[in-house]
Image (tube, rainbow, N blue to C red; front, side, top):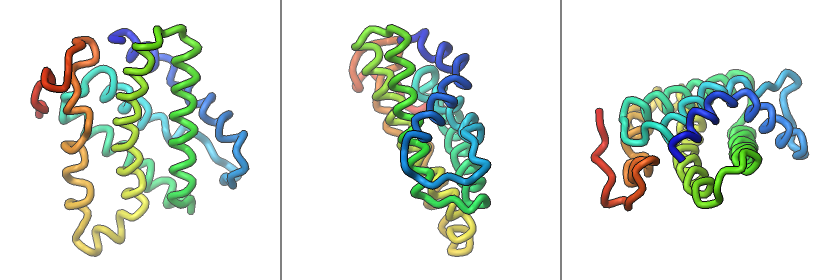
Length: 175
């Protein structure tokens, strides 16, 4: 599994195109100028957090920041949370299909997909909160709802992707 992260990072544009195709097959309204390109920064950080640096707090903070910015963008475009959930679902399916097409051994593919799913749950939460940033800031809740999100990642409980082992072997989060 250690070599899967760089492969996914290199092929991120292909994964985004596949996600767009998956979403195109759903009967969901999309803005006329919809592009998955906005999700590219989130995907790049997601791959890094899930498969390369799962215990690096700074990497998790970059993921949360990228996802918040993506959520803010979708909010400015007038696209609601429902669409963000659909995009993340399409991205998850694209990752699953892409990894399957790469001939990754089943156990490694499943381990990678679990890690990606865990990171994606943090990113999706940050993106949705990004759509509500102005309201959360006005209520004085932004830091409470987003500030600690990076440090709450379930990936901190897993061993490094290239180390095997159990959650008990996971190092503490590194600032």
